[in-house]
Length: 428
Image (cartoon, rainbow, N blue to C red):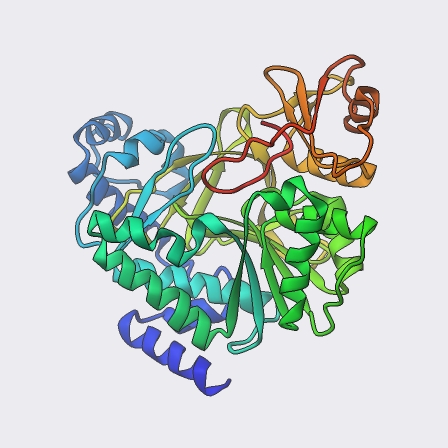
């Protein structure tokens, strides 16, 4: 353990007992989950009268659960429910990027919530072989840049957020983690040269660890197949987070970058929920210590964050679709695992009668070697980034995705639709 790590762990343990244990082992802290849930439930019921009434009816007047397997009796909370809850005693207010399904949502955390979420991050990084101080490159949309948002925060009087984010990005991540943020704009999805330039900027710092969203990693690797991949001489591991990681992209990243590839299911609202690594075959191990994970209608993930005492993230409807089952992983571990597929309502009907979600579309598109494209499921339109190359025929795209013939109309050279979060999706 180096001095930086020792200082961080000791400080965290002083402020939140149990911090060090959680930071060292992913999924630690399973003791007392029922009591923790009931405490959060009592807080939420006191703050949300309508929710309290629904819970009273579901539990026959009881104040809480007798066992965790009763959790399905309680109502599901959505973005609209938590968006209207201000919450008190917050140290940090984190704003999600929003999706095509809904707008931005603010998640408030108190000091203990911030520390436990950070401990979860350290446990994820540790699983991937990272250690405090190892040189790390993190690829982020320019929308998340500190100084890109500084003016707006200043005008709105969000001085606490200005200080918190500066400390997080430049003191904690910059100095202690030795992490460099590398920003990109939407051009990386429209032009292969821009995607390659992003990889060159990342490789130039000779990182041992690379953090990226699957969408931008896939765009960069696809461009590198037709260009020249810059050498990542010291790279040991890649961690992706933010969108579904297609298996073809994961395999290509491992082969082309010469590194182990890990994928994380996480969100601003819920923290670090699940992690998968080499040999997990696309499945992710759920952090059962700090999260309760279920599926609802249509296999939508419903997640409870047991660490947030300010914003009631209880049975929160994520809008994400995934397989969920308790199983033995090829890596040797046994437990609850999930396999992300994509966003609820964003799928294509295949010729075989199945449903194709983002993760499957990303894999098939990458394997096909086609240029990046977006399929508008509602309009049957396909937007293409041609990069000066001839447009493939509509038949090539429908065949690559296993769709019925005549399923789409091509819009060559059309700009992609990318939301405020900066995420690229094949299916919109």
